[in-house]
Amino acid sequence: MLQQLDIADSVRRNVAPRTAQKHKAELGQFMTPSSVARFMASLFPPSTLHTCRLLDAGAGVGALSCAFLDRWVTGGFGFESVEATAYEIDETLRGHLVRHLAGYSRVTPRIITGDYIELATAHDLFTTRQPTNYTHAILNPPYKKINSDSPHRLALRRAGIETVNLYSAFVALAANEAAPGGQIVAIIPRSFCNGPYYRSFRNFILERAVIRHMHLFESRSKAFKDDEVLQENIIIRLERGGQQGVVTVSTSTDDSFSDLRTHEHPFDRIVLPDDPQRFIHVPTTPAKSAIERSPIVRHSLADIGVKVSTGPVVDFRLKAHLRNMPEPGAVPLIYPCHLSMAGTVWPVPSAKKPNAIMRNNETEKWLYPNGFYCAVRRFSSKEEKRRVVAGVVDPAAFGEHSMLGFENHINLLHEDKHGLPEALAHGLAVFLNTSAVDEHFRRFNGHTQVNATDLKRMKYPSRDNLIQIGEWAMRQSTLTQEQIDATLKTLTA
Image 1 (tube, one colour):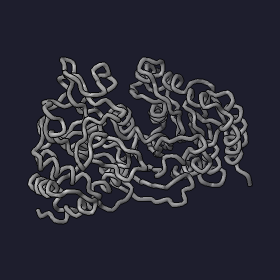
Image 2 (image 1 turned 90 degrees about the horizontal axis):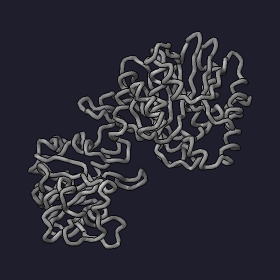
Image 3 (image 1 turned 180 degrees about the vertical axis):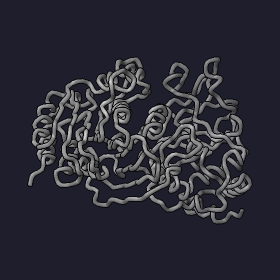
Image 4 (image 1 turned 60 degrees about the horizontal axis):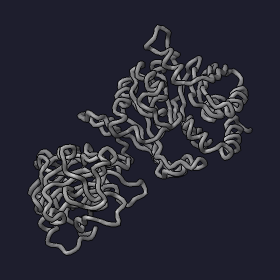
């Protein structure tokens, strides 16, 4: 029998190609394929509540609501009735939404034309009116940045929510409107898990809800392939209140879920207990990595006398001081393109990035003394062979320059903002370029950004062992990956 979701998906496939890209961008609109909708609906635990109060904010043509209701109709839940509240501001989609929800008996649909953020912040816990107390929420919220002075940002701030994107605002509001024990399943970009801009959102969510399940798509391009979305997406199930226990993590290559793999992890592997940023990590296997198993790799950066910082030069903020090539009064500005395991190449005339920054009163505080440093690239694409890429900053490449600028796409390992001993810089670079470190990072983090916090919380060989590795590396004319990987096996505690 044809289910309502199949009808909704047929409409989605027909409507999506005819919707202008500009219109989608204005609304942050990406409609959910039926395979993803069914999977999301399957993540809700069984329930024998008499009445389900369902929220679908940013409902589109109703694919997510239909997936949830189809599961109920076929015996997946024990509800006697469902009150379905669906928000949709796009008039073109709303007509389809009304028809699709009308196809269910024992469902009381409530289609709301208004802006979800405006309405949810007007009747939440921060006013005299009572919250809606949804028992279930299923969301594919819009993806669009929120300007710092926009009405949305101000309304959210009044509700105690600080966030920079519509998707995180929708999830925060849904969590806030959920009844105790309420279940929220959302497909959202992976970006909320790390980075300073979403710290307040992470705190808001983790103070009100527990994480029950996370699903990662290994391909960045296939979950919303019809909309040509390259954003890395995650499906997350939250429970309002409750006691945090183990977290189920599943992965699949794409939205067919044909190679679905599922594991459970203790929460202290998801959010490290002493992490003030509360980064959310997504380990993809329960097995310990070679780094975790190694008796040699057990020292912190503090143990070995090294600190790590993000490159302080944010180029667009200091644009007036940047120079394409060095000139009198300028010092070298180092981007990832200047670094490799083979050495430092500077300047690079063909680079699309500036090679220098003027040294003056405005830039002085962002500069480091020339010296040996270990630098790690902050960003990579998910499809790249390596996630962690380290290089050595060699002072010989910069001639007589006494100061250096490090751009924000670099993480810098240093000693109190000064250079490292040469052998230690080489040893750190070799260790961080091992396949074991790359595998550990991929398993534990699951994201494409290498943060200074990630490097700080990793374990390393001892300072003596790192110097030993570095001295060995400096004697080699070339280094292969096989040689780099073999170095860990030669070390003793």
